[in-house]
Length: 129
Image 1 (cartoon, helix red, strand yellow):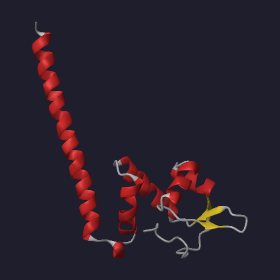
Image 2 (image 1 turned 45 degrees about the horizontal axis):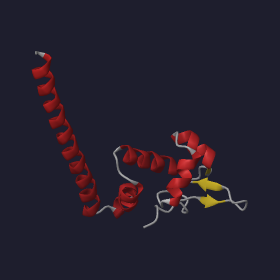
Image 3 (image 1 turned 30 degrees about the vertical axis):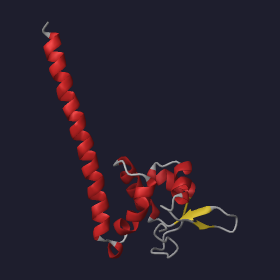
Image 4 (image 1 turned 90 degrees about the vertical axis):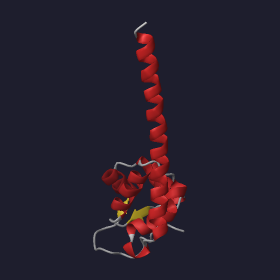
C-alpha cells in the first residue's frame, strides 16, 4: 500500500521543497527521503527532479513522527497510515493494529515494573544489613 496520494492538490498554497518541509516539521532531509522510500510520504518532482510536497505533508510527517515515537516501525505504520489520514479509509483493522501495539507496550511496561519491585526488595533487604 502506498502513502496517501499527494498528487491531487487540495489547496492553492505553494508546494514545499524538502528544505521547507524539513523546517516546518523538524525532520531531517534524510528522514524525509527515508519516509518516501518506505511508502509513508509521496512527493511530486520538478522537471529538474527536485522533490515538492503539498502543504498537507506537514501534518502527515508530524503524524508519522508521533507513530515512530510510539514505537511503531515503518513497516507497521505503512498499512495504518491511510486510515489515520483519511477517515473513509479507516477500518477496524486499523484500530486492532494500534491496540495490539499498545497491549504489547503495556506487557513490556508491566514486566519492567515487576523488575523494579524486585530490585527495590533486594535493595531494601540488603541495604539494612
